[in-house]
Image 1: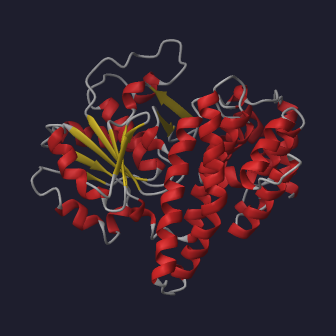
Image 2: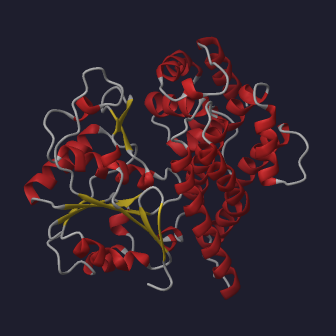
Length: 396
């Protein structure tokens, strides 16, 4: 264990290359015998998956891999049925934000009555989370949502695509095995989109209303990490995608920046307990109305949301600018940096290239206005404001 770092914030995090090899020991320590491994269809086909599964030979493991795209309620229903049929005494969440969120919801519904959305956060007559929840261990494979250190699960309604938040401190995984080696093979597009998701969490948390100095400090350090790591990670991903071999020195740098992005992702999820803002409300609307990838939606909407907020928080923007360039003298430089970074990462500048059409505008505005993220935004955002933000994104 000498090569691994172990700390608690807010849950127990074991970090280091190869730390996934501690999965069996982690389950043994919890007294688990019949884990359900929740992942997605693509991860099940990756070369490291079978060795990871083989490392659990001492356990009666069942794999549930029917997760794909933006997670929906029927995936949770099927997974909870699998957990109940297996008599699962532990849930292993393996993947990006979707499998981890589904795994947390499965852990909830395995022993709780009713329907998943009976437990929706903020619902006046929401059912209480008062039944057993199986031991949860999370192994993130992307550096984006940070769901592995979050206390909520975001699941969409199958028909309406409306995102619902299921929140309870008991949904926080008991242990996180943060192995950046699992992210080394991520393709450039996924690396870029998930990285911008993490960056959006960090930026919106820092700008959010309220006094939370710990969240602010974590957010600023996370932004600094992204500034030094994301573009480098995407560049390496492109080269690997083209069949290039990295030198030993380059491989060491690649490992370092992937680890930094995994740190930044978790930091974003910790920081946004302070709140988020209009960018996330816009992204949630795009996922609901157009089934847009969440990280990609955040990446596209980042500059528009930041421009909307600049006038009300100039000093905060200056601190963000100095996190990426210590010599910055104007907060607007941070938005310029975002725009330039996004272009270098290959993220579209506007909504048209995502297949979003002007006729979606009214629905996008309605969903964004009803979303629970923008009330903590530093500037009040009205229906007219959301319309203007989306219209700017259409013309970008």
